[in-house]
Length: 437
Ligand code: GTR
Image (cartoon, rainbow, N blue to C red; front, side):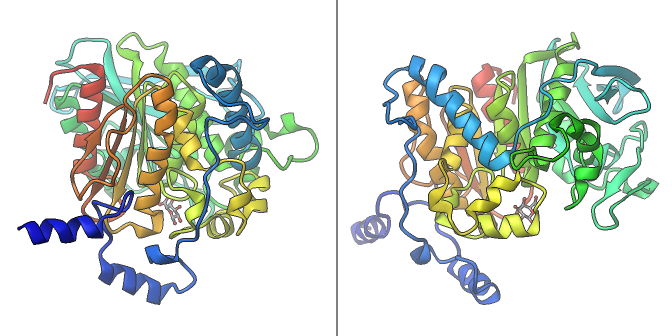
């Protein structure tokens, strides 16, 4: 027993304990993609920029310096060199139309609302449909989880009342009308009834309602509606798709603030994968989001770029040239020159609760890099007098750690699962001090 303990301690030097990737998976992936780092031993040495030292060398020794100087500076750096700047903060003409309200949805347990948000105010212009379910049994106003979805609102639940809207097909690059049979096809990632039974509401919109997701998407969606505000030429720091999707989440929040049945002070913004990157960026910028949750967001989300483990800056910019602003391409294979790393994105959310989740088999997203970024945001959480992330090492599989920063690595693949949702609701219960289970 003692021997076993000694061996375990020897194998877990500081920062490398707890979870370890499956060596067979590391081997298989390394053979399949020899240009990608999957072996921890190949991660280069790097030094992270200190979130508590300003560009001019000033040390952030108080919350005041953080709020007045360093935080705005970091936000501006991410806007300029990574996600890009929005041409319009909040559309003055934003218009909301309640296109459906059923107080007897989902076997009578829910109120379903569908709200059409017109970005330019023109009812023949660009719009996003926000689908909302609120638990009838819960006291109002009710806390909600807000997230974008990949395949249309009708795909999240088998409810025949969800309006089917034409959606952008990523491959065909055109609008298609989804077939009836696709209702509920993503239901596994959206356990709506369970969420309602734990006393939460859910609000969701299809991300391509904001901007489609393919390389020349700049001709469409909110880009088409607002890019003229930049003048003749799209600048190098003009918003990429992730910024546009994050902007859309804030517009959903604009509606939520008008809905008396929803507690706009308790809105958790959440996202999976590219939409996890989006949730982090939305939560970093818009302090109205009370909790921010990143599910398997990986490169460009929670994972540290400097580790170059799994997907890298160069690989993501090549595969998805429209996700970030043009300036970000300067950092292809030059991660050390970035004036920030992703721990600083997480730090922008402080002192609000943030949860970072990884998956065991999702090495492309660099689980350890996601954990280390969460851990490296901890000094900012501490400066703002919270407990930060209460662990030094990566926890073992399926063992969540929850301070003001939460983290887990779940068994299984890259996905948003019921396990993840249960932990996010535990986390929200903890921070909102709700008792339900
Ligand atoms: C992958 C991409 C990741 C992740 C994922 C997704 O192809 O490389 O960064 O965002 O897509 O969004 O599903």
